[in-house]
Amino acid sequence: MKIRHKTAAILLLLLCLVPTACKRVEKEDTRAETEERGQSKKKDKEEQRGEKKKKAEEAGEEAVLRGLPHVLFEVEGETHSDSDYHYLYQIESTKLKLKEGQKFKALDKAFAEYNKEVDELYQKERAELENSSNSSEEAKKNVLSSSGNTPESKTNCELIRADKAIVSVLLLKSTDYTGSGMEYSRSAVNFDTRSGKRLSFSDVVKDTDKFFMLAEKRARESVGTDVEFPPELLDKIKEKGSELTWTVNQEGVSVYLDIFEYGKSRKEPAVLTVYFEEARDVFEERYRKTEEDYVIPLIGDMHLDLDIDGDGKREAVYLKKKSEDANSVYLDFSAVANDRESEPLEGFDGRAYIVKKSGKYYMYVFVSAEDDITLLYRLDLSTMEKKEGEYWVTDLSTKYYTWRNEGNIETHRYEEENFSDAAGYCGSGRNDILSTNSVEIDWVLDKEAYPRPDGNRYRVTSNHVLRTLKDISVPEVDAKGNVLKESVIPANSYLLFLYSDNESFVDMRIIEEKYVDKENWGGDSSYFNLNDSNQFDYNGPLYRIRMERDTENWITKVNGIEAEELFEGMVYAG
Image 1 (cartoon, rainbow, N blue to C red):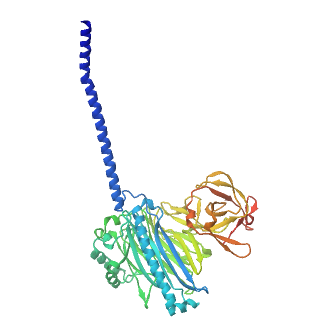
Image 2 (tube, helix red, strand yellow; image 1 turned 60 degrees about the horizontal axis):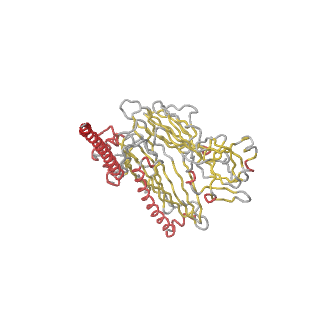
Image 3 (cartoon, rainbow, N blue to C red; image 1 turned 90 degrees about the vertical axis):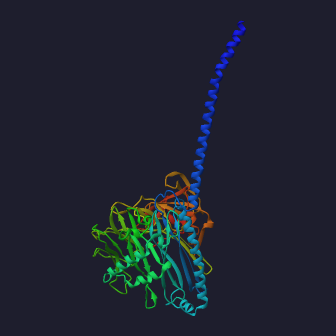
């Protein structure tokens, strides 16, 4: 009996536990199902986000644009000669390049498509020049004459605006197929920064009729002033239709017309700007919106009407050029704003930019001066004051120049920096350590638009190479200039200049001989050039060569040994 009662008790206990166990299983199943559903939803969302991102990329859109596009100009050209070294013709084109294309993928792709068109046009222009040099008696005559011009076709660019909304580029084409005289023509290309779309005039200007009504009003108001735009020219501009040349800056939309005088085209076009504030409904909103601080180039004789003193009235601002001697190439430049003129800036040539910084307008003028240097002047347009001795020796960087001569064809390539961001620009300078080279460094602008170099680590941009004659003991440094260890540069190494403090040292890398072109200058002297600019793209270890310089006697030593005993190929400019 005891056993039976005990068995019954155990069975009763098991029956009581069954519901509890079932509930626990149900809860575990529910939790698993919930987690599974959560993972599924998370996966679906990720797939949806991925699909949206893929579609956005396919449509050329990016959700967030960080920073402003840094646009470079990539210039390529060639010169053809005959067997007697007479120049038959020369050609040059300019492509668009983004410094950090991965940040603006759609725009980078649009630039690549545009550059294909540049290549196609280049081939057509070269064929035209080739045909002219073979068939035109006038071209043959000018090629052989010391007073004739070399037949040529060149296309140069000016970056008008580059921000998160739009990239606007003006193109100047100069052609002379027979060497008898240059013809000038302009065109423009405008891109939406986010999508990369090539913009038409109607994408930016929503009401064309009203735009030209405002343009006509401006033209009539300009009659009799220093910046007159003859109203009758507007009819010729309107006749161009889809061939209209137009650009967008941060103040408004400008239209251009090539001017012909005495049967020849003038180098400088007629330019008229309609400003956003005149009729905001005329313009697409996204292209009206700008950064608080910005830069606008003044192309040639172009002027802009700006509200300098904040009274709501715009006054003409432009760079005035004059020469006291008709036979002199030396000019006086002065800024004109609000009927006031600055003191003259002397030089051979000048380029001006309007800089808006912290709500105020300034003019930057880069002036080509004597001794092959460029001086930067900063003028406050509210005072027009030019402070004595206030200038900086700097220019926009032109870099990575390569030149080759094969047979009777010379080819060249280089890159040009632009000034389109009021935060700063990439400026060039001169370096005389172990040779004369061009260098560049980023310049930053403070709140009052005063420029200064950002640090003292200059990037060398010349394609000059040296060859070592002996082993040289030097420190090894990383790409940022931090010393790693002591090392030795072997004799017969080819060294490419990469960095310098512009005072006491250069950081160099060893490159393979196949990237070096050698020129013999007679005797044992040779000069070495880089033939592949991709060698500048390098983040590995470098060799730091420190100088001991006797500037009075022009003696440079390394480790107590005169540089001439250690290096071949050094060249200094006067």
